[in-house]
Image (cartoon, rainbow, N blue to C red; front, side):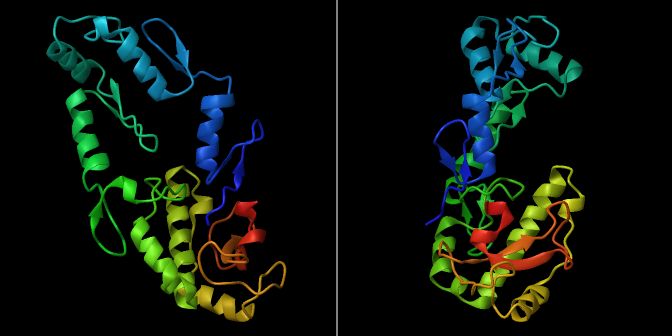
Length: 257
């Protein structure tokens, strides 16, 4: 069973990932309110909360430009103004927690939602079927915050291939590449470097005789089991390099502490 290893220091809640923990802290415990309403100067902790406020509190001036305080008789005139004067301004924010993309027009938001969050937005990397975002588990180490393969395939994989050495090594390698891509997208280029390979990981396993680099315990193969084998970066300021990677039991992995 997947464990909640990210714990809030302010309350007794725990989360599966640091991303979920950070989002919880910002919305519940943080005193910062960085999102300010351009109409009444009210401030909010999150962008979606600001969007709901604008819609509910200022609906009567829905054809007003929040950037320069000008107002128009029709939404069409406002859209024309925003397109020409404020092309990067977002009036409508996607309310999906892992998305929150902004759009100038409501119709563009509806199209985005239909394409990405209602019907077949993502193709599973294993079964190659297009499925809704709800059929993928969250993952803070990917570019879209979702696992690369669907929950059903993960379940099937857990019952079979993940209990083989090759299958487990493949999962570690895929996870490392996904994490590296995510870090590069956040501007952390140095920690996004990857030069390891499947052959390197298999060789490392054999060199370590299947035992944890730190504890010397035998590493297990599978999902949600004690002493599961995981990939560790010795220096968290460097990427997945052959000089920086070892295999350890998941309980001793620095990223899970």
